[in-house]
Picture 1 (spheres, helix red, strand yellow):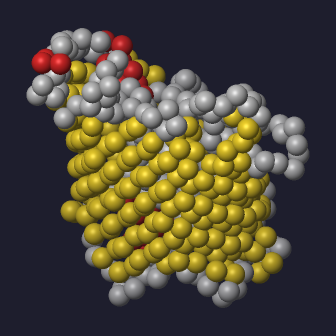
Picture 2 (picture 1 turned 30 degrees about the horizontal axis):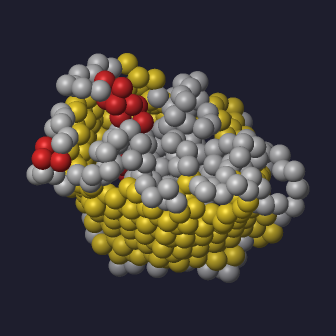
Length: 462
């Protein structure tokens, strides 16, 4: 099973910040880099349940957003340390359902640069090597609505009253038609095709593992406020695209999706190098996203399960202006491929994703990277009911046509997820990232660059 753990992207900061130099860096780092909030479910729940999709807990088969009655039951009785047996329903009328998520956070951030031993001998002034920031953030309050139009037809909408320049969108809406469904409204589900649906509207495309922390490098990563430079893919917290998604569940062990989209990874509306909502050519170019997963299902009395899959995103970007090129109508092919999977044994779950990309856009900072490599491996262990320990390892590197590079040798995250009662999550985490980068205005590479982050996050949801 899967359950929604909270939205992100939008944030409204109220904080204090102290450092020895460069207050702008400090504020930007807090706002853009350090907020691990998201709009997605915990993918390990589906893995540990042996489920191939997320329909057991969510309206959307690919997970996240609004929960169903199954999601309410999971949060109240399965997930919580002290389960509640009192009845609860998010239905506000016949066929009408509402959901809310709210997150707040307190964090500390430190950025340390180790300069080369011969830095002063080269005629440079050794600057401050430590920047610090701390503060409290109010991040997001999305409200979800769904209408059950029939047994197999549903409509969904999301709005978020907290607006932020960090995220590209504050709304999302789509209709989903299960033309193969257990109700048999259109076609009756069977042993071969358990479910098949068509989703149309504005939504987050299916790709890779939807880690619940959007700063994971295989998702949105962090912005250039980091001394490392921009790191991560274009799957930012409130990323959405317009188009259609076809999904099919096969033999109860395979789940395949195919998306035809406008291609909004450039986060623009007709600007050079970015996609357009309305196409000059109605036949293209469009983005295509493909994702497939094969699962063992639950084995050994639900003590063992595994899955493996792959994802592919393709988009021909028109009217781009590349470095050293005078042609304003040139094109480039954005390609992002991923292999991902998971293993669940007893109380332990491991998820991993490796990405290889070409001509990948950085939403927050702008610009493209010619090549991108990203890796994320996350392990969790259920310590006691309602308390889970987490450890994550990541790497990221890219190279651009203007010779700028981001090289993060490692980032480790250790933390806990505590669900004391239903619909409440408390999440403390500590992160340390290591890498190399250039000193601003200087081509010399540092010997070492370390960033540390400590945070505690509170999440209320229903």
